[in-house]
Image (cartoon, rainbow, N blue to C red; front, side, top):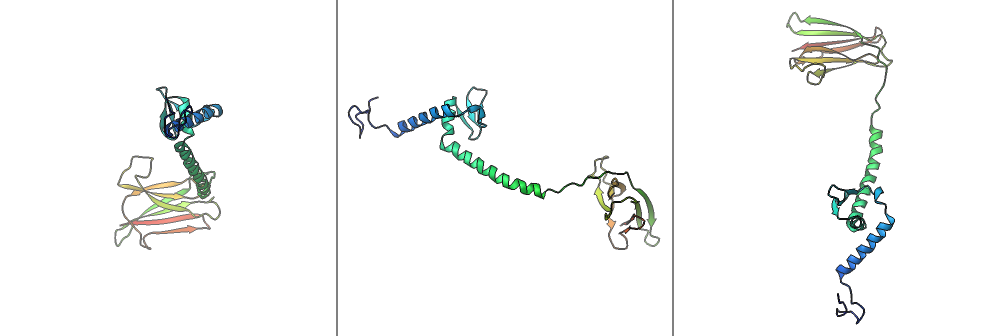
Length: 213
């Protein structure tokens, strides 16, 4: 193509290249430089698809050949995405140690079996209100440990098919296995004289009474 008659061109000098031609020439120089210096096997974002073309997994772009991909990696879009990815990874690296520090260490101990227990059914002679008195023995309980308890819905457990008519009362204390009692799924009377617990440090016995409304 004759460029010598373009504005600014000199006779025999080939003329002044257009902006598109300058860009094309720059991309070609970058491609040649990249081919000489970059090992694509070590590029985590380079992928050859089933069609035989190449993809940039970072920018989600398609390329007909390796040279086209390499020229893309030297462009503004790819470089901007690399900077954005690096910033995100740096931010995650700051957050991760904080999460690890906040993680609660799980206590590990050797369980020595189930504790002994006794359950007594009771009925108030005046109100006919039904109640249960639990006595759980923990003779080998860990020092400075207080037995714990809680009510569990039938839909929380995984040992048997859930039944809405029942709930579970759980007792736990180290180093004993956790035990559970299946009780009616009725509202528990939480008034002080109807629902109470007591821990006898001398005899290592835990008592709990619950009454149903």
